[in-house]
Image (tube, rainbow, N blue to C red; front, side, top):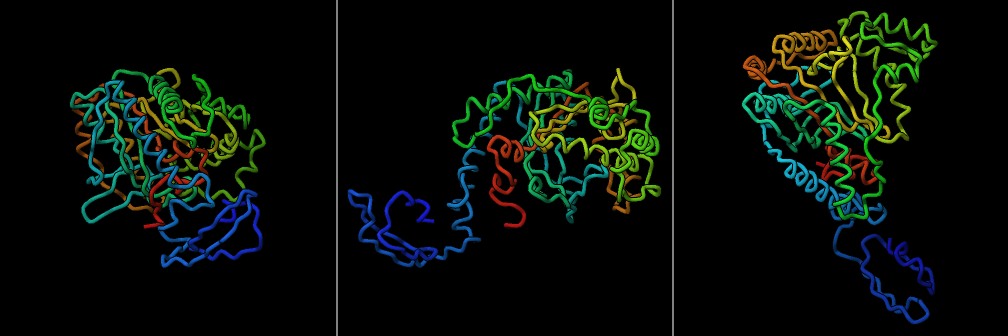
Length: 387
């Protein structure tokens, strides 16, 4: 390690530097090292221990520097929302009922569930009269691991009443551009494209990459038939049998078998908003008035990462209950444990939630993108494996 730092000096002879060495030396006018004194430190310099965990000299930038930048980014986000006259909220991490959506694996405790998102409680605040709110909070989703996942992560979520989803897409652009300008850090290495960022519908991407025409009426079987007719049957090699699943879940798994092929094309892309998702894939979004069968849902992708997910919010309490009940059927058909429905949230919707749009953005992934970090662990103080 020290040799790497002193590479431009002239070594008079080969020296051994055990891990944890304390070194003193003199450099003469000819850049030659003289009077080298090496002592072994009494400290334990275990490469896997905490003493080097955040400042490991081989990693550049060091994790500590990324965490300093994280602090500045989060501060910049709060400042931006304050300037837009949002109220920062703090809702519970422990709730009696989690999201029932089939893709989530909520973490259960003896007192309830850790939140997968603060969504339900924040929407109850909208019912109560708040109109511009945001929150930075920890969320918990089990069975999510990898260089882009940690079971505990930081979410930014915000809502605007009586505003279209497009407004929140613009919010993201403004937040990121503002961070690039105001955050002083050598680690912000990504050149941010000028807004507006590209926007494409799910249907347009299916047509572009798979030559499949989506009309929003597809069943799982019809979608697979369209894939066969357009020469995409190869994408279903080793695809599991979905005949015993609910139609809703079978459609979801069939769709994502095709979507994963499209998603792979985003690796070197600029930020891309993908909008108008099929209605079965948006449990909490309202149906598009212009395109029946599709939902007013948008996702932001940066390179291969899904960075944000937003909805024009569903406010119909009866439709929301129906969708939640379908989510429970999906969980059971996959052999997963049922979860209780959030009756307080559903009751709140019955009292009248205003037309609203909401967005959730992964803070850890945002920092990964802005700092060109390759592993989510590098932008967290501790990953699950480290505690």
